[in-house]
Amino acid sequence: MSIARAEQLLQAGIAAAKVRDFVRAREWLCKSIEIESGNADAWVWLSAVAETPEYGVRALERAIQINPTHGPAIAAIKVARLDAGVSAAQANRKDDARRWLKAACSDEPANESAWLWLASVTDIAAEAIEYLQKALQLNPANERARVGIERLRAEIQVGQRWGCPICLAEASARFTTCPQCRAVLDLARGDEAIGNPNPDVAKIRAGAERLSAALRSDPNFVHRYYLGMALLNLGKPDEAIGHFRAARSMRANDSGLANQIELLQRALADSAPPTQRMDRPFHESETEQPAKSILVVDQSTTIRKLVGMTLRKNGYAVLEAQDGLEAWQLIESGTRPDLVVLDLNLPLMDGHSLCRAIRRQPAIAKMPLVALTIEEPRGNPDPTKSLDAHLSKPFHPATLAKAVRDLCPLAR
Amino acid sequence: MILLQGPESRSLSSRPNGAAEATFGVGENFEDELIWLLSRLEHMRSRLETLRINGRLKPLLDLSAEFVDLVVAFSDEHCAFAVGRDVDEAAARVKDFRLSFTTLCERLESTNENGTTLPDPAIQSQFKRCFAAIQDGTVAFFTVFVGRFSTSRAALPWVEAAASFIVELKKLTRDPLSNHK
Image (tube, rainbow over all chains, first blue to last red):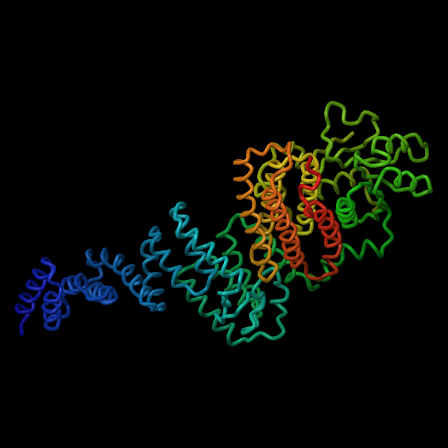
């Protein structure tokens, strides 16, 4: 058998392929390759008439191996990988499908069909949602992607599909701590992850290695985030934070994640665990003797409690009254708050009347009065000239705290 | 006098949607964000009560949608990775609400409901379903939010405020059209 014979068989195979006689084409091309295996063109033609897409991809890979600059092979392999991935997905060979489809997505990130197929063979729902979101970004009108995301979320909700993103163990319900590898999976519980008393180190380490490898081919948010969680559970917080920061950079608008990362960094920087720090603002202000007290007057229990929370956090003691009359009776009985925060729309004795009553008493005439009300100032918001400040509802705690501090600073 | 306008001094009609509101003044302190959220929800609850008393069905429905959007946006922003039964429950209730909301919008449009007469039983029933979903969903979301605190002691002040809110909300959701003229 000679090279000339190989060339003859190649030409015959090409001719058969052109008239779509694929069986003969394969026969002659295979014989040509048996004689001359280093002919990249033969492999490319063989891929074109391959019996299965997977075989076609392998043939193209062989051609590129022989000739890395083979233009037609390089162009054809992108489509071939997608075809192979789709074929494997349809045959339920998920590992092969994932391999081909990830390569296809890497070849052509703008191919929304590839992302859809990849999502369909991904076992981790959160990861699948990421892939579908990529398809949706490419084509916001892609109904299949949108419906797929909703379906996956629904499946997650009812616990039909949940797998630990670290060890891939399946469970019937979602957990914040995996029952198999015992990794804490939520950064909001980062302090628990750091102090994880009983992680399955081997499983978590294996998961971290898998996620690391996955990151190399697909550096997406999910891989970064869960690699960070794995490292946190393995007692490697510095490395973990690096990955969380990288994940954060992929979601610029996710201030929740930014807050969580900062809390984690604070937890690591300070020696005191976060639990103590979170408790401190409330219990310190209750056990110390605060210098200033604020009377909060509002019909709404919710508002009184929210204002009270805000002021206690900022070091004030708080008294409450649910209407103007109760507030006035409290003051008349000798209680002397350092400042009053009141709604102007009060039952029994409205806010303006309460203000006038306070201003008429020389002993308390200069008491700062802050209105907190849904009334919008129209023209003269303060006809009695009684108020020192006027805040609108709904109030932001920082705004309220500043107003109170400006009028009634705490003694230092 | 210091005139300090809170962030939401605009009238309700020009209020941006819940998702946009949720991004205003995002601070470092999650607890402050919860106070801010509950402050806005309380404001909306009060408005819902007024609309309910005045029998203004369409604005009542629109504001209830804003209410839900605000809670969902807050959850998406601050509890994106929360998992568990409460998350599932909250999402399911949101779904229920949106279904009822869509049905109600269509019904109100087709019946040309103008709020001057008692709506038909089907509409009343849908309103009840809508507000039941709001009630249950809000409780579930609040449970998720509280889960962000490291200890129950730390969460206690907000939990007390939230509990008061839920009690007030229940009055509204028990029979959303009971005061309809």
